[in-house]
Length: 122
Image (cartoon, rainbow, N blue to C red; front, top):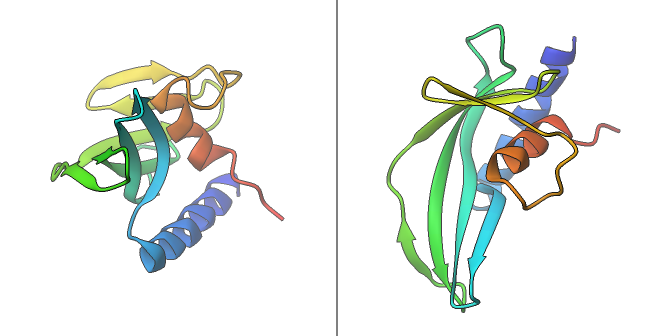
């Protein structure tokens, strides 16, 4: 049931981000104030691997201090996310344990996990 609910949340989030800009930023790192790099969810859905909840695609964009795009990565970086304990993000074949108590913004993998796994349900 949790998997179905999470899938519906991701689909709703994907639909709303597609209507807006096509991307949902989940992490931004600033470098001085002159530029920043944002990681975004480009697409996603239920994972094919039963050990994970989501399979997603991440994109990367770099912006100058005024918000103009300096670089948009054309790559499609795939990852899988497990919401339940032990929380985890898989990139290629590397598994990264997620410290669910970490502060937002300290680690992009935590922010990815939080964007997908801590969505408010009304």
